Amino acid sequence: MHRIAVIPGDGTGPEVVAEGLKVLEAAAGVCEFDYETKIFDYGGRRYLATGETLPDGALEELKNYEAILLGAIGHPKVRPGILERDILLKLRFGLDQYINLRPVKLYPGVECPVRGKGPEDVDFVVVRENTEGLYVGAGGFSRKGTPHEVALQESVNTRRGVERCVRYAFEYARKSGRKKVTLCGKTNVLTFAFDLWERVFNEVSSEYPDIESDYAHVDAICMWFVKNPEWFDVIVTDNMFGDIITDLGAMIQGGMGIAAGGNINPEGTSMFEPIGGSAPKYTGKNVINPLAAISAVGLMLDFLEEDRASKLIEEAIIRLLTSGKMKSLSAGKMGLGTREVGDFVARYVREEKA
Ligand code: IPM
Ligand code: MN
Image 1 (tube, rainbow, N blue to C red):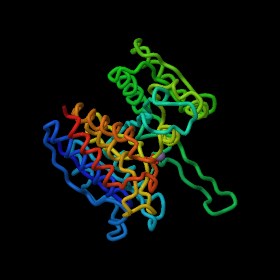
Image 2: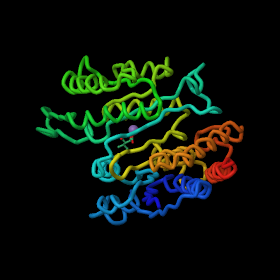
Image 3: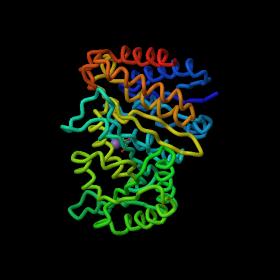
Image 4: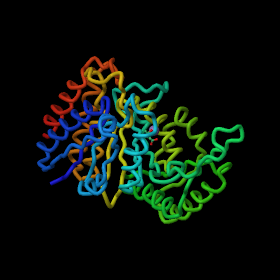
């Protein structure tokens, strides 16, 4: 019995999560596994009503679940930063989800914005460190509001945090049959943080002679995602660079409508989410693309060791994408409604069981 916590969140989050759950139900029926879900109402609406972001005891309660499915956090009436820090980042840090795993895979039937690149060229995974770096909130102001104001924001990189992330990337490469791990850094400027990353990377990589290792600066990576995405297989990087390059990655795989990620604690509760935001302007219109949330369910099932269910979902998504039924992956331009997309994927999962 899998125990899954569901945080639909704000904006279009609840709509896409509903389609994810629809597909989960189909996959559970076909693959004959049991699961239970519990909905948690964390997000902007609860915050505006009660002043509470994550209530006391939320982290402890969530630790009783194997996985969390998250829709989106972010509300136009809440000042940016509050919900991100006190809900999303608090969950990632508090549950020690030290890996943010973001596959960048262009599916057949999806138009790549980079001319001449197809599914065989865009298929890699970014392993983003998820609990350290610039995201820890180290730093502060002095002389705030004066002409001599100073603002410092420091990147925290611990030996243990870097090593477990790099090791995860190599293990992931080996387990998933990938051939190469590239460290994405900035060793020419960030001579402390990425010195540590580089030393750890070299040490760990020597334990994996079967996996090729490589290094690229983050700025060059941005260039090569567009020019030569086929060069990449597994990329490991820090929290901030991982955040930035995975938005670019999402674009070359067809956009936010399809990009999903997992916040992984291999020994604890992991959280799966579409990478896109709460899209307030599309809320409640049945126009948002739920494929990213459905892909997040696929990723989640992979981590719950329901490999066949995960595979069926991916195949069903590809079947829909190659059917010509979807005109676009962008909200409002799909030619199908949010619920219809979910219905098709759920139906294909059921049909593909043979
Ligand atoms: C992401 C988002 C978050 C991040 C924000 C909302 C805090 O951009 O999941 O990539 O920066 O990690
Ligand atoms: Mn981001």
